[in-house]
Length: 189
Image (tube, rainbow, N blue to C red; front, side, top):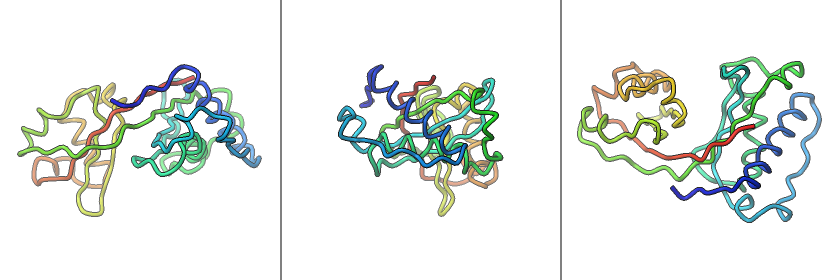
């Protein structure tokens, strides 16, 4: 894994995410991220997911699999999106802000996973380590590695991921899908 943000860099990203969350929920314009004042690792393009929880229950989670903008800006954008654009939840209300805990996941580039049938796929994905992307034509879904904490068997992980992309839960057993894996460095408030 090529991600190695230190404690200071992690704290900076969490502060950016918290400020973006609070301002966006309150309808206040976001400050510009001053990239030239940040460590080079936060200026470089990076892919992230921002996860919001209240009492360990998911409240929003949005991110990207591809690095297309500076990591600091990516975290800011996804903190706002997790609060206001996750279709699974109503928008975060100002009264919820003190209850929300923020987790940031910084992703490695995804790698194709070559496999020969469903049994081989189960053997090759690494529970607790791999984030997984499934693709079937225009449908695509991902689970971060943290999802392994709740879906501990590869079979249930893949079945739930199929359902997340709008497919039957056993699609991964019935036809070859494009499969990609990635890892994350995660940190939270």
